[in-house]
Length: 345
Image 1 (cartoon, rainbow, N blue to C red):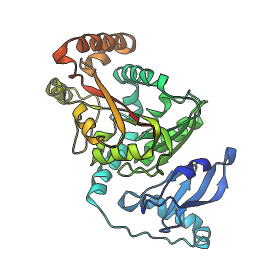
Image 2 (image 1 turned 135 degrees about the vertical axis):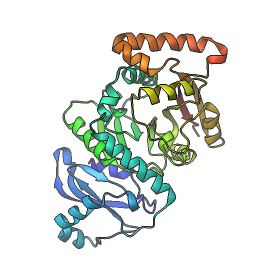
Image 3 (image 1 turned 180 degrees about the horizontal axis):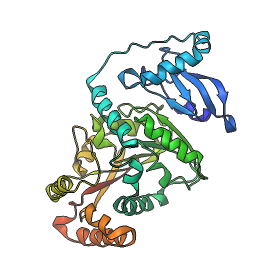
Image 4 (image 1 turned 90 degrees about the vertical axis):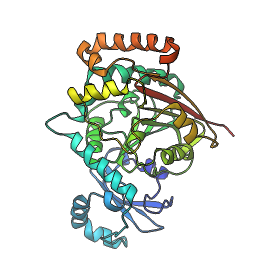
């Protein structure tokens, strides 16, 4: 856990930007290997184990891990004035998020398809490369980027070769652990901090980052409009938001049928599984954000997978060119790509 990143964080329990920390074991480059972060306003505390900060509250907390952590460091935690139990009230929003948490913990490693296997299928390799290549020219060096819903680093590592400071979080502790191990085993230009947190309220202070990446995450959340307000709150003036989501295309029923017959991934969507340009224009209306969108993917992902990496990438490009050239099809791609910019003061 990078200690510099702690300056950007706020308490998920009370939203106070009043966090402090204690280091029990220090890693390389003065990173927190084992330690605790706590809020001086409400006294909620959050463990750091083997470099992973679990910045969760309420029923989303990994209680078995928390109890084990307390047993290991009880004397130190007590000496800091911290107590063992939190006792937070439950909420309907957190119940929906707990369902997402369980799904992605399962997706981290299972016999059907791991999330890493999902990332590496030809369709997503072609789509991810194409989409991130369109965003790269916008991103300036030595800036701060937040990746919301980073999973095991699928989206984060698309930009890890750039000289950036990246802060990335996900609700699944298993996936975040995989992301940390992936980062430790590689050699990247970006300085990346992964941690566990919930996207109902982004646990960062106002206007703290230059870019926010929300890559296929909003349709998993109980209230996407709230997340859009959080994006605006966190971006510095002139900052940019990048995202992709499922589009309510005229081809959606055909894709859903193919998924039933030949499922190629496992989906657990929230209350609003599909999102169009009109939704984003409404969610960001009046808060100083300019939103541009376009749609992509006019052929079934199943076909791209059958063609393999090279031919699949060509087919995706070719079908996009054709789809966007036909007026009534232009907004009917399976995925909507969003790029937003916050007004400068």
